[in-house]
Length: 193
Image 1: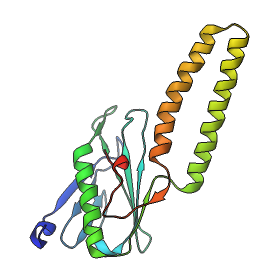
Image 2 (image 1 turned 90 degrees about the vertical axis):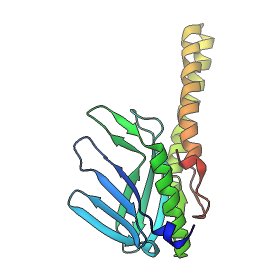
Image 3 (image 1 turned 90 degrees about the horizontal axis):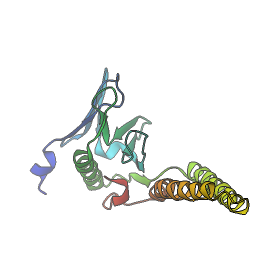
Image 4 (image 1 turned 30 degrees about the horizontal axis):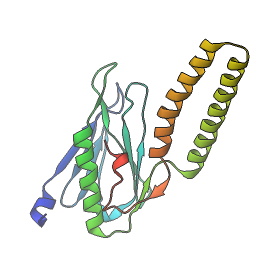
């Protein structure tokens, strides 16, 4: 891309809650501009100190992603891949979110700012999540064996089905949110829609 292409603004907007003000972001030739209700500002790309990408499903949308940005002065911004479109409708914005996040990384990397790029949750939260996951899977296995020993085959079948669903859903979330760092030129595909 040429310098002229880089200066072309890239926009992204989402509504974080039903009653909340829309969050709007724009990548300009000078930096990242944002507006949220009465709060607004501009960050130079070189001032972005940290970017953390994570996979954050919710009950209404199982395929939702989040980017947390931190300014070198401590300010924080959150960008979510879905928007509230009504009282009970959470709508994914996969293509525009992916394009915005990839372009943000490209522009931050071009500044050679020393930004720290992190993927997944922090290590303590990940370790606790793995421990809870393991405890639930062990409990389900114990209940499955007990149901078989007492002749409760329907209960055993239920435990097996629930363990399969829980392992698939939670295991996938844990694998995507494994804590690690990455280069801004190589955004982790599993943390983008």
